[in-house]
Structures are given as structure tokens and as C-alpha cells.
Length: 72
Image (cartoon, rainbow, N blue to C red; front, side, top):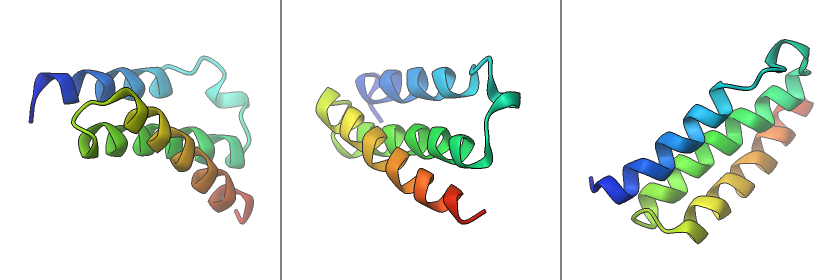
């Protein structure tokens, strides 16, 4: 795995894990944030660190996480 792929993935993971309001978030919001982080990492890996792939993966992951969290 290239360093260009790993850096955006790590940045998204750190940003998602560092949410200061995590305790005040609903289950649906937590699922959306987690989905966005996982989607961003997956998008970065698939697109070899491409910005569009990372952002697209985060957006799709966030939507999926939101829908999964809605059922909890």
C-alpha cells in the first residue's frame, strides 16, 4: 500500500474518532459518522488515494451508516 493511499485514510479515521460531541450524538449520527470514516478509507484504498474516491466513499458510507443507524 502506498503512502499516498494511507494518508487520506488515516486523516479521515482520526477526524471521525476525534469527534468532541460523540457522547451527545444519537445512534443514527454515530452510525453515519462511522460509515463515513469506513467509506472514506475504502474509497481511498480503491482509488489509490484519489481525492474523489476518498470523498465519494465517505459520502456513500455516511448515507449507508445513516440508514443502518435509523433501524437501531
